[in-house]
Amino acid sequence: MELYELPKIVKKRKRIGRGDASGWGTTAGRGNKGEKSRSGGAKPQYFEGGQMPLVRRLPKRGFKNIFRVEYEIVNVGRLNDICEDGDIVDILYMNEKNLVKRGKPVKILGNGELNKKITVAAHAFSKSAKEKIEKAGGGIEVLQ
Image (cartoon, rainbow, N blue to C red; front, side, top):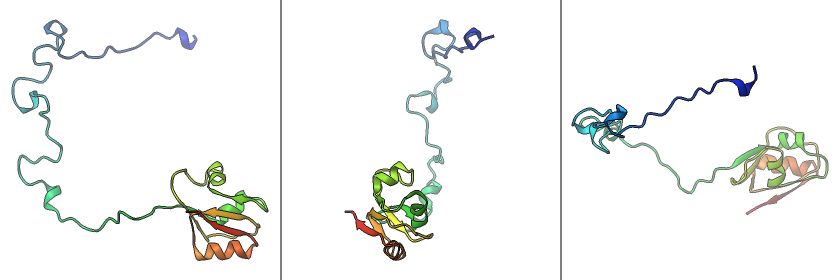
């Protein structure tokens, strides 16, 4: 038997509210009267019958800094694994090697060892990453 020889098993969708002959006419499976029979009648899951919902009874906590910058993080150890001597490592290069996604700024951290002379272009560098790159004979370029 081949794939194209298999019988077509497609369940017909239920067409609600298309007359009495369909079996789902008149009330269209919603029952008679009441809030849930009306359009837009469903209440949200947190609704508690008019009682002040738990979500609103609990105090708000914390603070969300709207100016926070979230960086994609790359360690120098990973750069050491994917790069050759003399490479210029920028955002596009890291994206090709699947280290970062496009759209977010990139920060280089100093975890791992670096023993290749590379030039790294990123939005931010930690102190230890800066030291390790310069100690290996490479250079850094801070992007805006």
